[in-house]
Length: 126
Picture 1 (cartoon, rainbow, N blue to C red):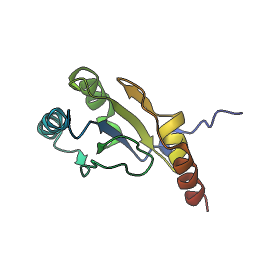
Picture 2 (cartoon, one colour):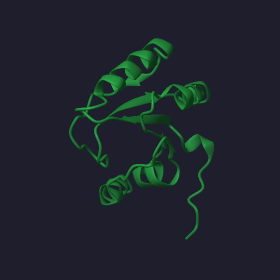
Picture 3 (cartoon, rainbow, N blue to C red):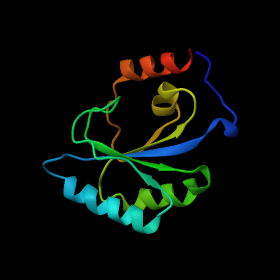
């Protein structure tokens, strides 16, 4: 298999998915969310998803941010994620590659619904 190399211009923006347990760590996730908004007001905060959504098999919310915010925000998350697991990935034209090939984890690597990502990538290529 050939690695799907892409030019930097293929990255439209970035996502960070902050994962939590609704019963045990949602308050920690809420605190982290407040800190992100305070430190990085230019980010776009996604909705809370206590239920499984898309390819995500654990409760989460998304933080969308621009390419020029990557260095500062990801470095900040690396040392301020309050023990939560975070998936950071680019947003290009292929959801499968974005999440599973190009993405990286702060904390533990959690499973994702690979079949769902394949379907999302297939739809986008049509």
